[in-house]
Length: 628
Ligand code: COA
Ligand code: AMP
Image 1 (cartoon, rainbow, N blue to C red):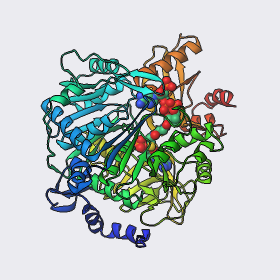
Image 2 (cartoon, helix red, strand yellow):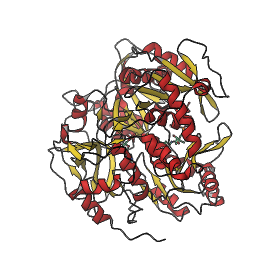
Image 3 (cartoon, rainbow, N blue to C red):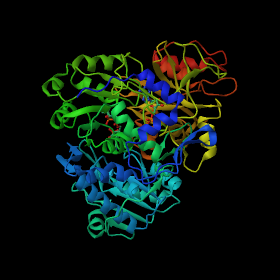
Image 4 (spheres, helix red, strand yellow):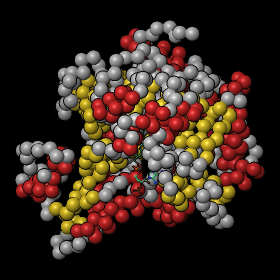
């Protein structure tokens, strides 16, 4: 059956003029236990609170309603784990049974409505089940990415104060076994808050010691559990917290409410990803990031798609053909990954031989996000495939795309370098430093007019002041996205760089300030700076600069090794800081601000003029000597 022709322009305009009408219609696709009283109310900060008074359950909508409708035998989870040699399928009926039991087990350990549960698990069915089990009983999950070290885990434990931790004995990075228990032990020793219990999934690759007070074995807990039913929660009840990097070393606990988020996700599966129920959808991300929350777990299951959970890397597990082979094996319709993953594949298989060997006849589109898709990557992939390659722009704060190409509504022309056009509910502008809109084609800070569509974060966990200061104080009436870029005459948005000290390494958002805090604590260091240097594979790589304290003269290589090790131990391997330079002085303005942008330009091989405000131009000479 051919779909009726729809128009992006008409739907976009309607969503701005009649947001109630647009999102009420979208909400009909979900099961509500009680209808909402108000489609939206304007709350603090001028933000909308969506579907106020409505009662809903995320797990019921993702799992139980499909079983109730007779689709229990359909595949819900496809697990492909080349690092363990495992491949398995889970039907919706099996998922319902497992999740109900896990929910019963965590409830029996004292977790109730609104309690936080920290999830520290590798990409696996267990991780998705853990998220759904929390949602089933109204608990708030906080997933922490496996690549973060113990001190980062401790910060998240202290901020979220979880009642329980769900974890595994190990993660696997290509062929390296990463033992999780020592990381948890360290984190518990560092944290002020102590979770009451830890439930450990023992993986065959490594046994952990659960013969300890307050530690429990996952399988034993489930075997004894009474299945828990779905509870009704308010639409504005938090579904999860997800920590993201900001301009300080303290991660921000982004709070996602339930109802509005589910509505946007369900809507996006048809309108953006153009996926029909029953098809296979694959987001090759990690459950520890926002893309994993939205598009490994919730959205595909809401839409009754089989979701692929991949535990591996785009290359090396075993080779650069793994993505294409899995897509062919499971007849994936829509695939989503980060540009850095495609660049890794391109490096390993420049002619795309592996891709051409796979039967990709089911694939209708590839979506990229996490960082800007450079034109070379877009052209390489687009040249090998007969399907559109779509860049779309996302943030942890938004939970889904701000800009994209709504394939399920109308396929718009693709402009290389652009992240597409604004999605319904997003009215964007680019502003100069005084808050005035800049003309089309000129770069400014990208802002979105309030109120925002459903799904946008409802706050930073227990920190309203930070929420306001980070996003709403600078440009009243707008959400300040933290990204800079421009809109062209056709309304396409080009997202070019961050306006803050956040850097983007292999599609991972990291705080350069957090790394600076680690470097600054070294006894030999008097001051430091970390910038993101352009990198062909990872987009950016952090690069450190330190000035030594008077009287210090360590061996430069030894000092670099110590600093690199400290960042790895305190933030985690994912920070990927590998190089630190010693300087006599950091370039600064006369008011003492470090000229990070100028340092970055020099590191990227540009030749910027000395800023007018520079205090001592000779500080730049040393940098020029390093980078020319
Ligand atoms: N647990 C433990 N360690 C982890 C980890 C995890 N979950 N994820 C990454 N690491 C470690 C890696 O093993 C590596 O350690 P090393 O320094 O000992 O080698 C380090 O962190 C850096 O990892 P990564 O940035 O992933 O680099 P890589 O060289 O292993 O792989 C890519 C490079 C491009 C293949 C990989 O980064 C990738 O697939 N990126 C896609 C990211 C993505 O999907 N982002 C989500 C947005 S959509
Ligand atoms: P995260 O919150 O980890 O998802 O990171 C969000 C940030 O990644 C954004 O603020 C951007 O800086 C960057 N980003 C994500 N997707 C894109 C994209 N398609 N184009 C440009 N930048 C992107």
